[in-house]
Image 1: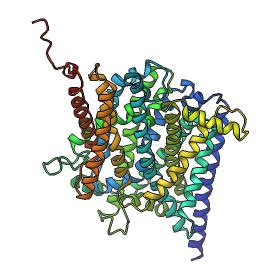
Image 2: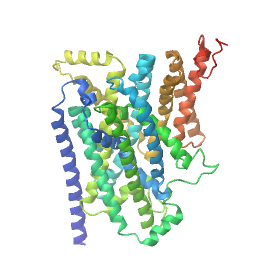
Image 3: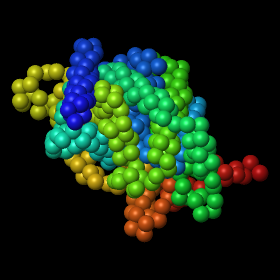
Image 4: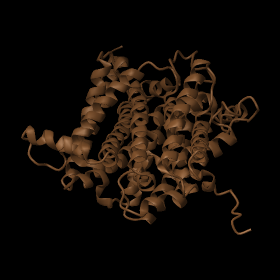
Length: 517
């Protein structure tokens, strides 16, 4: 009995020591990097001077976050290696972005994805798209932050430590704010790079440890059950509802990736910080390879746990949701110190996603809504005698966004749905209308602001109504198909608006020119 108490105490000390070392090291790194910050533009764009490989890893760290690290093992426990199949669709989508979207942004030194819409249609549409991004990112990141607390709270409960959930969330936010506000985008990207390496290393260690407990017969059982298949079998019954069929993963996943990496400020901001168009393309396509590897490792953990548990259902294991599977293994199935490393990896995923979101939201407000926000903050700075620092406005906006995110995360606490599925569903509300607006501007050179703004607004409203209706009647449409639906709504609404515009029929590229007949 004495030995058990000693081992439990040592595990608690070792794990907490690793986490504390991580929390101290990251802000110190950011403060060092922040010494290079000289202007608000550098704070938001890193002076367009970041290496492609760092941007590549930052893209993956931002895209995956806690939703990936926590949820994918739980999903693969019941569904197999399906996220690896989804990565194939992501690769196709990124390829499309490198060919058609990145050259648009390379035409000028932009700091926001929505500046293209401002140049094409005017500031009204740029601000509308940016506002949709801010709302979507606030909700989606609230889900991420709430999910990120699951393993940490589990560990504290496991060790008999009682602490308020909101307090833990506040502590995480304070450490994240420290390096985000001090270092800007440059510190965020370098911190993302380190954070991705931490939780990728931890995931690989888990795979190696679990593999020692699995016999060849266990792998044969996983193969026979379909747990090693990258796609679900497609039928008429699951054509729309299952996100992991071949069609949904390749087609829907590709369109989702075009929307997220081609029109979402969270991702585009990093690509705009590259030194050249060539570097941006390397970063984006490199991230497709890294994300496939990460998806494969995390999915493999879920399959290994399924084999280890003999295929026992999550409910029989006494788990609240699929997102509890991996945290349970971290706190109860790993040796002293390694559990702390994995929890540091979870914190890395949470903090990396948070810092990226905070910087991107501040960038969107200052870039897309004209000089008004900056002037208002400068007036406050002068009246409060806070000096003439150029970073006051972005730092204050970063702080405001952090408070909003904490409140949103507390609102999402208690959800029983897989966090990664919920987060992707939330993003689906604006991804389709936004991507549709970009396509509208490319396909119809004569389209006007009124047409694009009408189509965008109707598509957003239509998606909200449709998603609310689906929720009310408990109907399910897989998240990869939400983006194509939003695109369709936008293009149809914009085209109808053009038809009612004077001379609108001549805008359609398919209309034959008979003037010379």
